[in-house]
Image 1: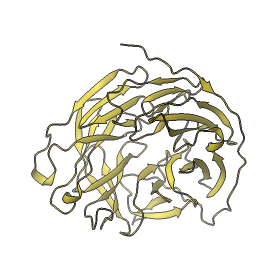
Image 2: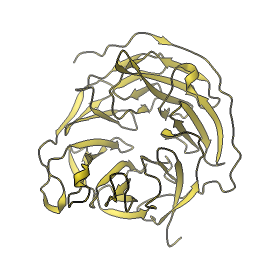
Image 3: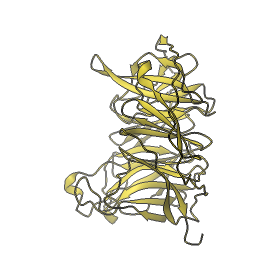
Length: 374
């Protein structure tokens, strides 16, 4: 296999961002373990307040901190237990302008990914910030990134990050591009930073991020389902979410056209098992939309924002958070959301499995779950 070539050069800047705390709220989040046996109702425990739209969010490994990135390139660091903002990090001062972020595995640093157009090409910049004081550690030179589904994930050793389709050494700033098949493909990264899944036109390839080698190639362009149960045969699947251990991957069918919103066809979502090399389950239910499925940290549960009926192309009549059991794909709970409420773009369980954060384009709500028997 051809060896990966680093993009040469980096710029290192140092700066210190002063904390700007908010007043503590009266009712900090109450933690309770979430699992398939105690799904009851969502209980809002805290809603961080931002003045700008939100592009991404990330939990710290100890579940004590939630970081939010706004579209102005400012990272907001929130203490979840105290329900206060610890500080803001203005990444624009370093020329980074982050839009996506992740904590390193040790929780000591925050990795940011920002993009800019240079000579008509989409370029990415990775920056590294100390979580404790907001000071800048490192920023890379711009490197090419595909246009779709950008994200950044730290490896368990906290010395590298996977930024879309690139491996970034966050100690030296060197960038090693993975030789993926197409610059317009979408990318999903396993939480442990081991795998990168590329999706394009129903073809899904899983790469080993350490070597760049293709380890799994799925061709789902042909119909793998019949037209029974209203599932659309042959519609392209996209890899969306890995389980925490990187062994399972949720594949979701593409977005329905507006003409299909009120007919009898529905999207399908399946689970691919990397250990067995096959599809292990289909997520139960008939939905027109399944947004950003999230695995519970213990891998037993999947949650997603779902819609079964659209009023218009922009408004869902019955939005819900739907929960499935991972092994069977069977529904184990569904919690209705207000029809005029937030459109959920991202769902993240806290690493300790006690809280659930929902993000729309302009707000984040942190929930706990309480059961009827509690």
